[in-house]
Each structure stands twice: as structure tokens, then as C-alpha cells.
Image (tube, one colour):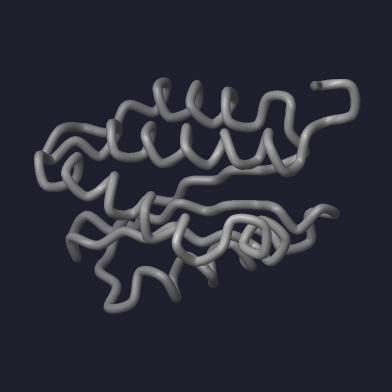
Length: 127
């Protein structure tokens, strides 16, 4: 497994959030988790991202020791993009993870999320 490149992840997040009211966060767990999606939901709440005024935060959670990951979108973004979008993003990220490329997987998922955030939650004057 390749080391996670924090600078590339930060750049992907900055790009995803640009021209959008959305928020994107990444958590890498140092321990195992049986349920990555539930852990992602919990981390979104622990970070108080569910209090973001637009309810359009997205949290990417990676648990390398468990070989699991999840993407969790708060209420407003989930209502706009639907369950199939998240399934597609996870399916697109999976080959990167299988190659041990966590950074590439996160970059891809964050970029796809950013497209939706800009489309559904543009900043005033951003279009």
C-alpha cells in the first residue's frame, strides 16, 4: 500500500469545495472498523459537519487495517444525488484501493463529489 499524500488530498478537497457551499472531509482510521459506513456517519457528526448550514457535507472514511472505506453524504447532498451516485463513486474508487492507491481513490471520489456540489450547491456568483 502506498503512503497517503496529504498534499494531493488537500488539493482535491480545495478543488471540490471551490465555487460550492459544500464541505468535504477525509478521515483515515488508525484502527479497524466492522462498519465503515456507520463509522463515516459517526465521524461526520463528531466533526459537527451535520451542522453545516446547507447540510451538504461529505465525509470520506478509510480504514486501511480493515481494508474498508465509505463515503457518507449529509441529508441535502444525498437527497440531490441519490443512493446510486454514492454506489457509483464507491465502485469507481474500488480499483484504486485494490491497487493500494488510497490517494488516487480519494482524489477520484472527491473530484466526483465536487462536480455534484458545484452543480447542486453553487456559491453565489460562482456560475
